[in-house]
Length: 470
Image 1 (cartoon, rainbow, N blue to C red):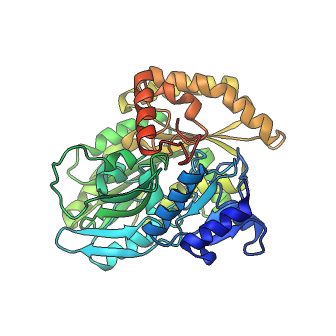
Image 2: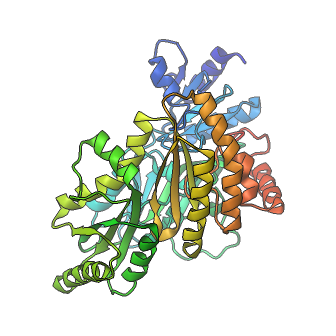
């Protein structure tokens, strides 16, 4: 491919300053490469052309050009994914949506915010709060992820147990398909019973059906007040008992998270935070509640008293103010960063029915102990919605290539166990490049055939994020 010609052609379509060719002196090479990858370390980026559209028209022009010239495209958001979904490894054009970060409209009556897809999730939170509303989808990467990427992966996060997935908060989308055609799925009304609701096909499609350029998200009222309880738990089975116990109290549970002692040690090491309790424990639980007054405060202490009397915990503490809330959350939200920045990690993001969780973990622990002798396992997740993050940490004396090779050998056995216990091989990180060979563990052959047919309908030349998912 003549990349210089591609740059010239695209510059004529959307403007010269929006198109960058690798090593043309415009951008540092390391920064350039970063737009063609995500947080995975398996596939190095390999591409030459990077574009920065500023609106839907720009994206449509780029995709139309790519369609006519049969050039593959990789959409790039905040690149916070862990499945290789944003990796450009075969000379694709990378479309960064980072300059598409504006508020398009706000409806105070319906309670919606219309934004461009490149808006950082944390900024969307601020835009909602400034207008007296609340956008509840939240997770550790909100400071760098884009709302378009959240939607493209159907992100979940830490409050799914109460608020649901991002899918539940999307009313409208603007999408550019694989031919450069623009779809505008109306988000200004709640009721629209006019046939197939096609927008849901693009939510969770990882950029393989179309590029999301704008979104209308539903907002809600802010929580009255938030309080966090942090617990030291001696056995995993106690965690599920604690979760059951929360249902005995009329208090809105916003989040229910857990982590192991290994994860806590890495967070303390990376962030320099102190031990939460005097004595260490094997497991830790973080619960977040909405409280509305003195009666709710009493319920918080009743929960702590109840699980203490039943000997489900060895220690526990209720945050007394917002600063303590933040401190407790650091122990949980600092895990991914602490692991990713200091270590090479093979990540598995899985989900199980809660009733099968303990039996699954017993068999999974035996498998990992046998197959990963000498490896560290970092286990944490969103117990409230059955989502486990199971991370294998590379030993220092092992090369990356050998490490990933060994992990790939064990994955099918792990996914077989997940299938046995009626779970999913990907709860919220998506399929991307890393899990596409294992899609059959969670999807039937007929489902996969139907997905291929849908892909062909929206992207007939297969230029959108090729090699991902299917």
